[in-house]
Length: 507
Image (tube, rainbow, N blue to C red; front, side, top):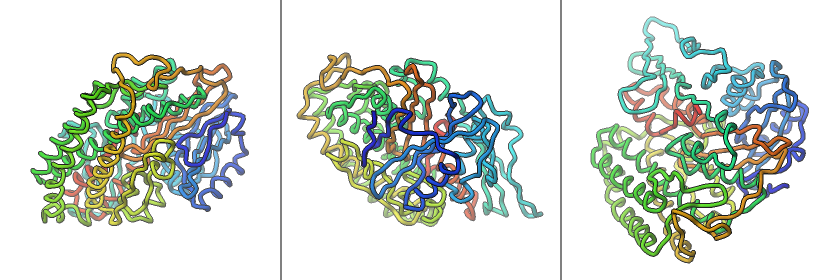
């Protein structure tokens, strides 16, 4: 089995197709790939056949030719290897995570600190080695982990000179639930309810990645109808969360019309999801080999009406937001990430695109869906809070246009019932057992950035390792860099402009 092909968001095959490389060859192939315009999608450890060893796995991408590559090496659990983060800082968070989970040390890593404090790690949150600045005028400001708002826990340690932030260190891990370990305890065909709670605002993206990876392990391809409905679910999630982000940014800078109107329109979107699948957050909508949703002439009409309402009501509030001097003053040149920094650190999703990097899996790894129903790309150049807000506005418009095209396709499909779809209908296919000794990787462009799920099976076909990656683990460092040389009072709007997930990073 080998379903790797250009433009596909899936890499899958028998484990024997991906041989264990010597560590020098492994690292050299990574360097060669990056030197030819590639980048790292993920780097992670997994248990080896020999219990005293650890497999080092890397997923690489090249947007130029739409190719994904999966490579493996192996080291002893208490062994080491030369850190790739020294040459390519985009590896910094991955090597830290691998060391924390498996004990394989990246020699020379410049910032080898805890990521999320799993139970296997001896590190504890109260002994975190914060970076220190010295000087009589330097003062520290600690925020969190418990915050005044109804948000997730995380600690932010600011090193300030007067009101200016010179350094921010972000300590996370308070939301660690052991999600990857939990996924190994269940029937692999029935993991969707757990997957949907990895990051509640990205339920669809994570579940779709899981479905694609598991279906690849089973050696099946889903119908065109299922692909279209999954895409509709993903784009509705994107629109809803971009509207939530704009509402939050508006509230943070006291632009009350934006806070009220964007929040109201988000409700329209999530209510549309509820009408289609029974859940405002899309839970229960996607399952391996099927979709569960309501498709009747009535729901099609309601869907179309909602899209038209959104397009009509968005124009005046977008114009008001973009022309407001208050909004421009607070957002422009605040929390800037330069393009070269984003490239060097390997930031993804909105963070990359708002800094001038056209990084969108839907364009370069479109799969069948986005190849047949293409979606436009949007890029902003300034890399500041303004750019991240403008990107949201433009991507909402792009997604609404795509949803209108998808609605026309949807109208040609047979009716569907949320309660039950017949096996071997366009909405539900028969799944074979997962292939033994195999690997499957799937990537999805969530509203926040690329989501990756990797499933590996042992010789009996049981899932031996499940790796989940949310884009937040890569992008939290961008928040720390963005606030440097900004006033500490600008931190809330900087943080909201990125809108990263604590639980998605902490798993």
